[in-house]
Image (tube, rainbow, N blue to C red; front, side, top):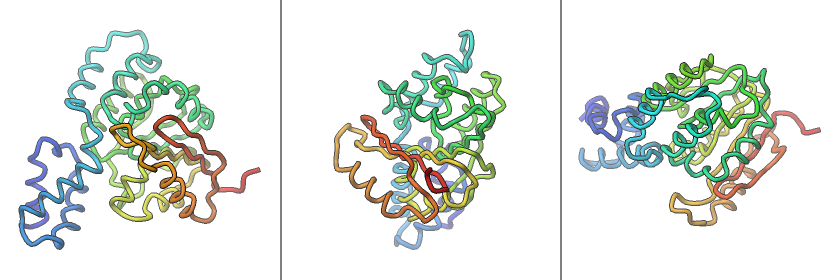
Length: 266
């Protein structure tokens, strides 16, 4: 089977039908030469997609999120923290912040000003957390590889009356179109490094931004500590390109944050 034929086969699966086609084609092209038969090739591609995408999604997350938004009857969706918590629970990455969501987003918000442009790469359900931000930024662009996530976020921004946008982007091979003052890359590094070593550092280095907010998980999805904090901290600090400086580091129960700037700290 060709790359296009295998991609068509993968996209017929309900689990992966919302993944951007170019992502599946890229992974298929990289995987085909490694296996002698079609069955093993498709299995390997699906395993890769599970690691970088499907493992983060809660059951029925798209339908549930859309239903919450379509049936919303609150006063102001952009300040409704109760709705945010429900939407956060539908994605593993944001669900892991529940219980510390106030503290985490207060911490993030101190680096985001009302006049800033924010670029959220590999966003997942993170843009739903805007009600926890101290100040809403002037611009916010969210990038993900999942078409349903992008559509749901677009609907959320519309209902909130915010001039924000969400777009498909496979950042493994393409740079985001928008440049911002603040780059968010929350728990994205391991996902990108799984696909292309050093790519996450390249993105931060190349994008024209004042501050990058990067985070890593420090516990497994089952809640176990497996030396992840030490491993990711050592890896990140050791491989940080010249011209990027860690100005602050903060640990929460499930996640560690690094604040980067492209100039020497005062």
